[in-house]
Length: 74
Ligand SMILES: [Fe+2]
Image (cartoon, rainbow, N blue to C red; front, side, top):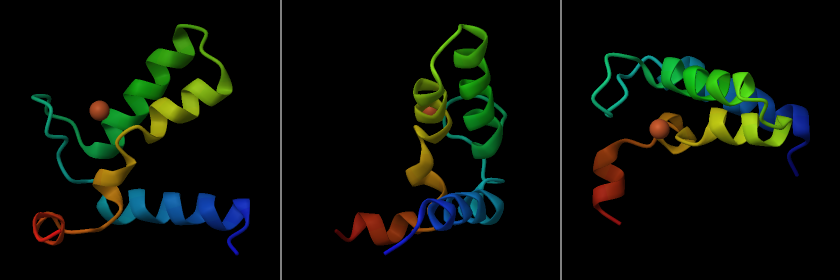
């Protein structure tokens, strides 16, 4: 069973490995930059810690390291 620190390490590792990919939302930013921008806006708007975390991770699936080709074969 993974502990909370293990989960956080895994999330950080996935952002380090795959977060440099460009965000596919019409903006010239990486996945990591997009995640940080989203969390920052929620923080500036006074959002709760949980909402900030949700904003930070809302596109986490894009940095999990699963090539799109694998997803197309599901
Ligand atoms: Fe997004």
